[in-house]
Length: 224
Image 1 (cartoon, rainbow, N blue to C red):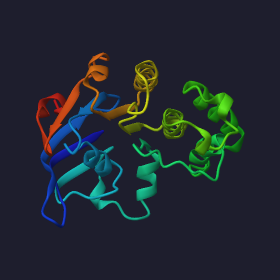
Image 2 (cartoon, rainbow, N blue to C red; image 1 turned 60 degrees about the vertical axis):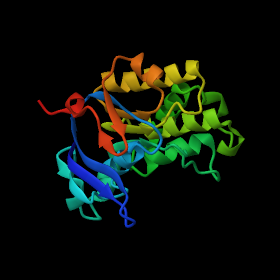
Image 3 (cartoon, helix red, strand yellow; image 1 turned 90 degrees about the vertical axis):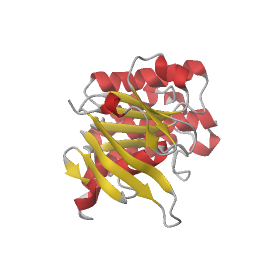
Image 4 (cartoon, helix red, strand yellow; image 1 turned 135 degrees about the horizontal axis):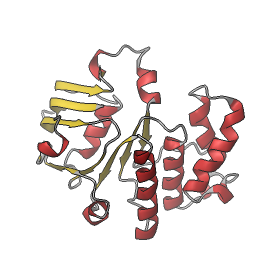
């Protein structure tokens, strides 16, 4: 489903954010991506949805080499990946409901299905009663939960999240992880970047551990 083969990501300054990273995440798997700030977690996520390209090596998502995709093929790749950004990337000129509905509209979903699915997604993250509010009126934790609802409303085959519990208390963090578990049980491939090792360890899912751009335990995400 997701494969990195000897991937190096080098910036024009010469700094290497990733160094010869290789791993394979099977379809329907659930992995955590752990490491300190600057370890390379966000760089891995950016490569998966092709916000950037590797300097060396290859990245495959659902069997497709992301570097070989044309501009016309790129939207299809991204529609199949639910991305939960650390800085939310919400639209503050739209309501909570409309932020989530937009994800379905751009995917050309049946308008008759949108209202019901959006309500369910908001219910799952505890925001149904806030659906007519503007996101700017929400707390940081509520905005993060809104971002999760938007990323998962279409039930994409892949969900990747950058510190999705970072602004949440432990109880809500566990609830959010239970949502990811539900997606995983339904066949979604889930990759969650986090620095909260205690929270990750509670789930029993395997970890990919990053340090200074290097993957410390490549066998945990190795192709059999």
